[in-house]
Structure formats: C-alpha cells, structure tokens
Image 1: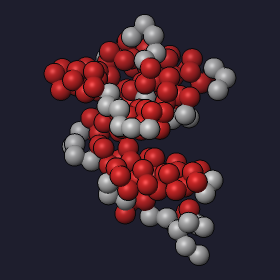
Image 2: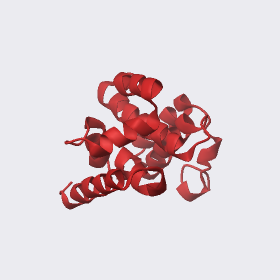
Image 3: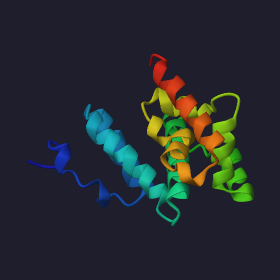
Image 4: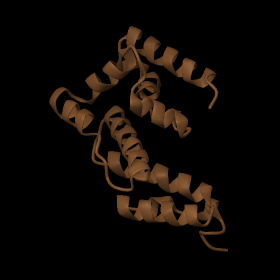
Length: 154
C-alpha cells in the first residue's frame, strides 16, 4: 500500500515547501481524498511558523498561513493578509492576538477559519492555549468568543 491509499502512512513532515503542500492539496481534492487534503493543509501551516522560537508566535504565523490558504483557494492566487502582517511587524504578534481577542466583533479571519472547521487556528484559540501569556480579561474574552462560535450552527 502506498501513501495515497493509506493516509495514516503518509509522512507529511516530508513536505518542506508551501508549493509542495498546495500541490498535494490540489491532487488530494481531485481524488476526493479530504484526509490527505487536511493533512497537507495543516503541514502548510506548520511550514509557515517554522522560523520562530516562541510557540505563541509560531501559532500566530500558522494562523496567518491558514487564512492566506483559504484566500488562495477562494481567489486562485496568493493573497497576503497584508494589514495584519504589517501590524505584526510594527507592534508584534502578541498585540495582534490581544486585539483580536478583545475586538468587539470576530475578525474575517476568525470567521473564515471557523467556517472551515479550523477553530484551532484562530487567534482566540491560541490565546486560550497559552493563558499564562495573556491578561485574564484577554483569555476570558477569547474563551467567550470560542464558546459562541461553537454554539453557532456550521
């Protein structure tokens, strides 16, 4: 049996570039292999965060990669989350996560990720995963947003 017929045997860690991940995702969808697509999607996100040491920052960039991949699929071309990339460069990833959690409304990115079943890639999920890195009110706001999202029908 090969990697295409046995998804549990596929070694996604061998995918080292965004392009390779996207190629596998495209081929997986053509073959109705949503399991391989999901594995390649998650690997694409891992690749984006690999150059950082702080696990919160790694998760932040993985979230950005997930949103950008959704945009890529929607528009058929690379679409960068330019505003958030600029803000992260200027103010830092932690500030971006705090702002997302405390925002009055869900971000477009949050909505896109939730709709795709990738709630674990949202900034709010990151905040609640590392509660010791954020003020209690930030963690509470993030947890409340996640709870509301889980209560909404898909």
